[in-house]
Image (cartoon, rainbow over all chains, first blue to last red; front, side):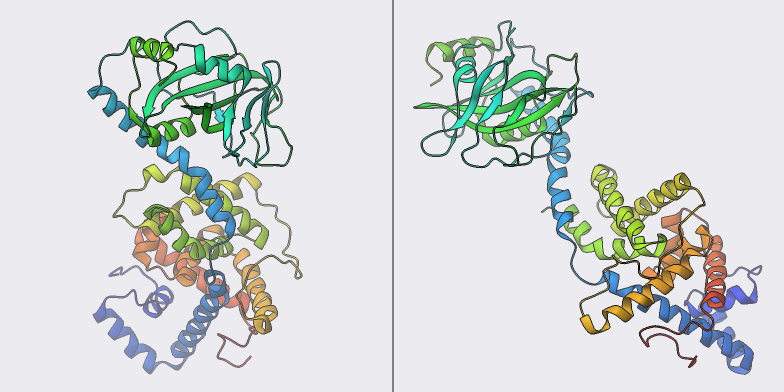
Length: 275
Length: 174
C-alpha cells in the first residue's frame, strides 16, 4: 500500500503482515533493524499475532459435526426444486398439448413443507375424517395404498372435478412400465401423519394449520404401491394445493419415463385398470 | 454430496473458528455458525461457481453476526471463566489449557470495537490478506489496514502481562 497518510504505527503492522510493497517493506525492515524501540514493538506484535492464530487454531481442526450433514440433506429438495421446474418446463414444451390445466410448476407461497419423513416398518398413515388408514405396509413390508386412497387412485380422474379430500394430480408411466399417479389427501389440523408417535420425524404441523399427505403411487399387480409420501402443512383456508410438493416432483422426475398423460389417455388408462 | 456441499463441509472448520472470533461466547458462536449454515444453504443459488466460496460464506456469517449483535444491543453478559462448549481439539492433556487460552483470547477480542474485531478475525485469526478481508467486508483496503492495526494495538494493551495458558505464542517471557 502506497498510502502516504498511513501512520508509522499502522505501517509497522502492515509490514509484519507482509502487506507493504517490496521496496517499502525493505526500507521499513532497515528502520526496524536500526531502532531498538521499533524492533521491540515489532516483536511484541509478532508474538501477539502468533498467539491469536494459535489460540483459535484448534477450532479449525477436526471434522464438521453431524448436524451439518443433516442440515445439507434437509435443504436438498428445496435446492433441487428450481432445477426440476426448469427441466419439467423443457419436457412440457416438447410434449403433446394437454387437456388438464394443471399448474404443477407453480409453488404457492403459503405452503410449508415438512422435513423429510422417515418411515419405520409397521407404521400406517392415517388421515382422520377420511379413512382409518390410507397407507400401510403390505405383506412384503412395502407401503400400499388402502381404502379411500386406493379407491381414489383407481377411479378419480384429474381431468374431472375433484371435490373430495383426495386429489389426484399427474398420471404417468414409470421406467418400470407401471402407471403412476400423484395424490394428495387433505384434512383438518393435526390429523395427518405416521400412526406411531416417535417412529419418525413428523410434519411441522403448526396448531390450526391444515395438513395433507402428498405422494406418488404406482399400480402393481396386487394394488397401488406407494413410491413416495410425506406430510405437508397447508395454510388454513387454502383447501386446494395447486401443484406438487418438491418431494413429489423429485419422485416424479426420478420415476417418469412417459407422460404426464393428457385427459384422454388418463381416461383410457382408468378403463384399462391402469396397465 | 454435490460440489457446493463439499465446499461447505471443507470450509466448516474455518467458519466455526471465525464465528468464535466474532462472537463473545462459545454459545453465541455455535448459534452464529448454525444460523450462517442455514443462510448459506438457503442462498446457494446466489453463489457463482468459480468465485471465492470462502469469501462468500464468510460474508454471510459476518452479516448475520452484525444483524444479531445489532438486535441484541450493547448489553452483553460477561464471559464466565468456567463457560464451556468450545471444541478445542483432540489432545485431552492440552485441552484444559487450550480452552482457557481460547477463553482469554475471546474475552480480549470481545472488548474490541466490532469494526476492529471483525478485521482482526479475518486477518490475524483466519489469515486472509488485507485485500481478501476488504472483499469480505465490502470496505476500502486502507480502512481494513487501519482497523487491523488499531485492533492489534488494542489487543496488545489488553493482553499485556496476561501469559498464555498453554505455553504457546508469547515469547517475551512474562
